[in-house]
Amino acid sequence: MRAFEDHPTPDIGAPRDRRLDPEWERAYADLWREPPREPEPSAKSSRLPLVAAIVAILLGAMALIGLRDKIVRVAPPMSALYSAVGLKVRPAGLELRGVSSKIVAEGSHKTLTVEGEIVNLRREANNVPPVALAVRGADGRARHAWTAPAPKARLEAGEKATFRARLVSPPADGVEVLARFAGLGANSSR
Image (tube, rainbow, N blue to C red; front, side, top):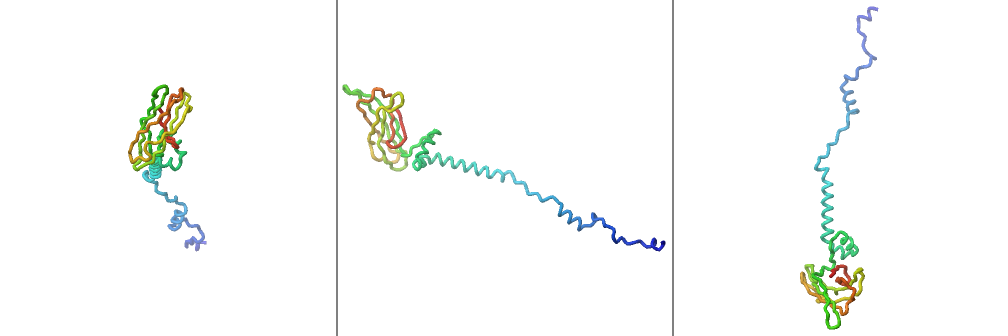
C-alpha cells in the first residue's frame, strides 16, 4: 500500500471551486448584475411641457379676448359667454355713447327726445344700422318700441355721428329708454 502513498493522486473528478474561475465570474456578473440606470431627467426638461402648456393657454386666452368681436360675428351665441364674464362685445364695430333722454312739453303734447352719439370703432369704414329704441316701465317690460334711422348710412374709421329720435306722447309709466342698434345686442339705457 505504500506504493500508492508515495505518488499523489490526481484530482480528476473533484469539483473545482468556480469562484476562482475568471470566466465564470464574468458570466455570473453579466447575468445577475443590476440593470443600467437611466439618467434622471433634469429639472429643466421636466418643466418644459408644463411651461409650454401655460404659454399655449395664455396665448389662447389672449386670442379669445382680443378677437371677441370677430368670434361673435362668426358665432353669435358666444356673445352671451363674453357678457357672462363681463366683456363687452361689439360685433358691428359701433358703439352708442352719451345716450340721454328728456321729455319736452310742446303745447298739450309731451315729446320724448333721445339723443346720443354713434362711434365707429373699426379702422375702416363701417355701415350704420338704424337705432332701435324702447321705453320700459318700472317692471322692465317694454311699453313702446320704435326704430330711428341712422344719421349717416356709413361712418369712416373713428368717425362719430349724433343721432336724435323723437316719440310724441310717450307712455306715462315709462321710466327708462333703451337704445341699441337694430338687429344687434349692444344696449345703452337712459
